[in-house]
Length: 133
Image (cartoon, rainbow, N blue to C red):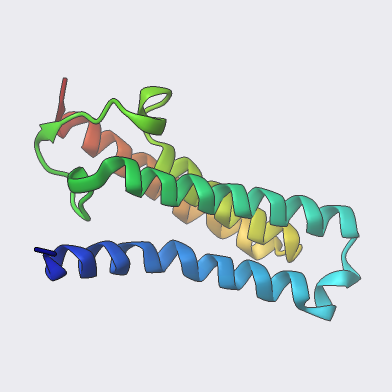
């Protein structure tokens, strides 16, 4: 029997990174974007798509271990987590970086480095303290 609550949670969790794919599509199809050098737009879109891919793959790799708040649990060592510790945060960072580059948004880059990056780092430190090997 399908546990619809778990299916709903999974779909709801994936909705946020998938919304960034919509943002990437809007960026790519926006004529205003092409006032920027096309190489920068293309580089930003590639970085953003790779970021979303990392983000979604990380969520799938975490499975039942995924949670909004860090909690004491066993460290995941499969999928992307076999290769490095926080691929979801790398994916989130890359998504924001790519979108900022594609849109030539210096405000976006500032926000990424002043607000988002420190928050991701702080969250990773809290998670490391909670996880067990």
